[in-house]
Length: 207
Ligand code: AP5
Image 1 (cartoon, rainbow, N blue to C red):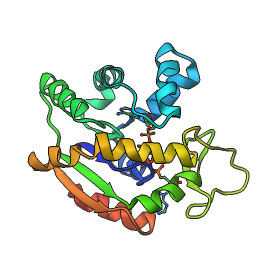
Image 2 (image 1 turned 60 degrees about the vertical axis):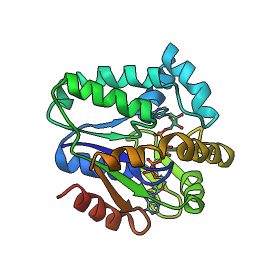
Image 3 (image 1 turned 180 degrees about the horizontal axis):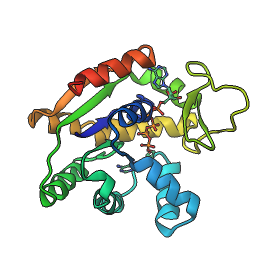
Image 4 (image 1 turned 90 degrees about the vertical axis):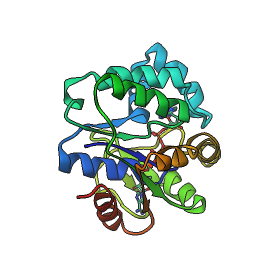
């Protein structure tokens, strides 16, 4: 299965991607996680990307596309993968089509997780992540067990979240007609219990 999860910040892409990938034994390829890892390691790419991320803006296409090209060549991605947060612009989607074409592969489905903007700010601002495992929690909806060391992402402040929503509507939402025209888009309601959303995602993927 070669799939993509798209949706606004806080829609639940990371939460659902982990569940699907554990079930299907395919890698979750999150460009956000890859960029944060670069930043934590202090690479030139990471330090450059951090300037865009902390402003809630998208990292330039060529940086992200180069990173994805390298990742797709790794053995674990050959049988399938799930992209979480990539592509994010039409230019990235076109580049992905080209990369997959060179590898003789094609996409099976693109799942759009839909959540209204007014719910997203609360979801993102109360998100916390387990520093050790990377597991995602929410202080109200998915409280962490006691003793877990939690961290908050730098870009999960209200002003930055609003800037990320502007970037989503301006630069990422055009992917909806892009994949709709190719017969790949499947819409999922991202509001409700997380387990219910998982059922909808798996159903949309034909499982
Ligand atoms: P990235 O890391 O991809 O962030 P994002 O797309 O903004 O999405 P989030 O991780 O914020 O949310 P999510 O949809 O994964 O939601 P989650 O499951 O955590 O990107 C960060 C930055 O990196 C970008 O702004 C950009 O600068 C850069 N970047 C990354 N990729 C790029 C690319 N391709 N091109 C250019 N730049 C790129 O859930 C959120 C919260 O809600 C959690 O607390 C969770 O517990 C809770 N929750 C989940 N589901 C539910 C539910 N059903 N009900 C209640 N709460 C829920």
